Image 1 (tube, one colour):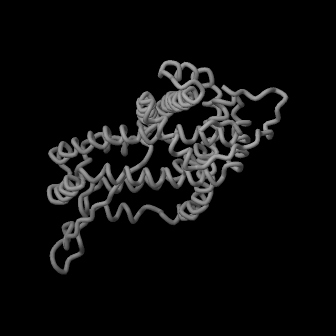
Image 2: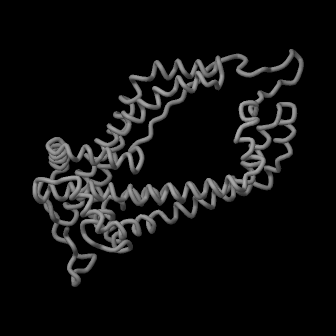
Image 3: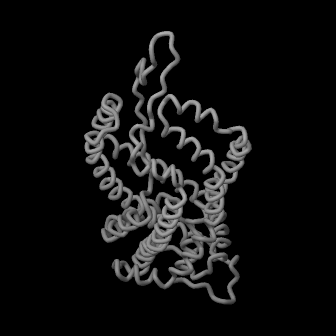
Length: 349
């Protein structure tokens, strides 16, 4: 670990070595190929942090009458959306939401804390393993996790500090939107003849200001999200490998990003293209089956047979997504650690 001396300013850096980006890409691939233990580390990180890329597709089913329309000359009949939920726990939640909300919020907070702790630990362990391979040519899972545990508290503090604006804005949006969402959900559970009147009775005008608030939130989320993405590459490694505190890691991450702005942006484009290619390859084997299931849904509806038919798709997506996502994570952990070393002025390609 390359701790900064106490008398070294956070703004002092070694001269950058002259390194071609193609050399970084190739040497990162060689390290990943020669050290298969990084594959395992990448898969573990993907399991604990979530998939590295999101893949989804839309299917449109054309029909002249997708829902009952009533007799000719009569007003259209609304579909009975609530039929599948009446008499289930969904209806209980809508009718008495407070205990379910408290339980749900508690479970969500607990799950997020567990994911934060173990996801951060796994990410740090993988980076420590990469750094150890760079230094000694070998590593183990146990040693990587043991070394990462020493900086786990500082890394969690760094994560909370960096993502605090996202957490605050997310809570604000949920609190502001819950009343109108609750009223609409209650209306959808009613029979069709009552649903339209219930939806019309919802006072959407009183929430008009909230919908004007969304563009402002988007304008805040997008630039800050980009800032977090570029800072994360360097700040996380500065906290883990450089031994800096949470706030100083963010400041140093910004400094290192400015030093390697071109290569960082190029890495982001490379990651996007590679993830898109992997996502397409992931979907190709199941596209015919997926389209068939979509057509079956529109013809048969939401049935247990339909749900059981989706099980193979979900199993395939989980297994293949975790495996391929883990390899992508491991590769970019190597590449980004090399970028961090270049920005600091310490690297041997």
